[in-house]
Image: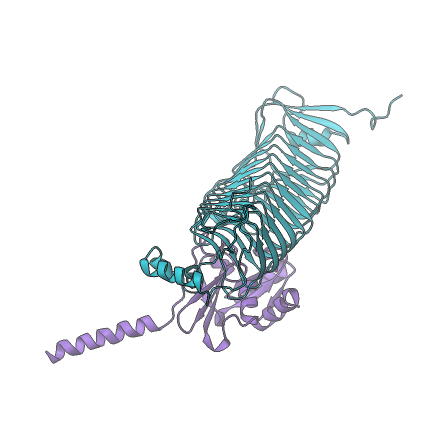
Length: 152
Length: 399
């Protein structure tokens, strides 16, 4: 009896923990709308996401839209759990900010025209920047770039 | 004595002519010539038109790019392309490969052609005074990210897009950094995202077009002075689908359009000074959604017919004017018989405000509780915008 009770308790705790840990949501390309610019998200190379500590996912069609959303404090900083980006080399999948390096180049036209793309591999990012006359950027640099381009 | 410049020549291309390929024809042509392409399938790509030329297809010739790169690039002024079928420009996520690209030119004309299964069909880049007329453009209609736009204008000016049929592309017609363009009498349907998409494009006009069954309707964003009249926006259903999505639009005019059977007929976010008049909104989920950051917009003499919600907003504040619209939900009376209802109409229902803040609440729609709540709110408005009122609702439809 106690054993059964314990196992139920463990199960409940596990379920409770799973439901509490915010997890990244898949972007349904062609259906979901961008939470910043309202456009339907269609390009798998540029989708981005903000996950709140409560587990709500905000989806974006481009890195610049997510950056603008963050800069404008649409979600308070303390409620941001994680930011996710697409690795240009692995379109359709999202990776946390910690792994990312960004490139700005006119050659890769993003949906909102600031032409930012993301990479997990520093070498690849450097190569893309070199090949397409662009520059690599940290997340801080991306935010500064979006702020001067759009919000000033 | 005649100079060759005055005497435009004819170059013929076809199986039974000296020039059997279009690239040979282009090579022997001189400025001002007419290049007549006879029937047959030409498996050619990366063709360049370097000087003024008229390319005319006889008996439906086909140029097949075999899904690699671009088919034809025009770098000269006053080039006309007519009566040719273009197939299979190459899919790429690096290059926006088009069937026909105009690059830094003036006076280009693309008319009566057929475009099938291209990544991008017609791409006008940094060009002026072009005409794109009466073409049939059909994309592959597979997945969104695998298809480009039907007609794509970038940094261009004074372009007319008229009488085209476009379907199966990402956006049917896409304009970015474009000025003084007219988009008229096109039918843009079943495109994966938008039938028409404006970005950062001021002083443009679109009228008498039909946009229906597109993935997300039509989007006009970050632009000023856009004149939109006599268009049909119909049958766009989905969680982020709109008849017409307006974002950051200033000083524009929306008149005599028909918004039918859309999830949201007209969505307005951060829009100022837009005149919305004499449009018909019928059978939409929401006829109009107007976000609190929209100001000084005027809605007048529109007909609101059989929409689930007429107006929705996300705030108690309202800085927009509604007057002399016809609301089929209006239950007022007209004692002085001047055609204008004697009691004002409040088009925002409390329930629509609640669903704006908490979408799952839509489940409660049509429940008795919601009806009582809406009724109570209509007599004693506490939560809905106090100033969002039509003080002069029409008794009869505006014809």
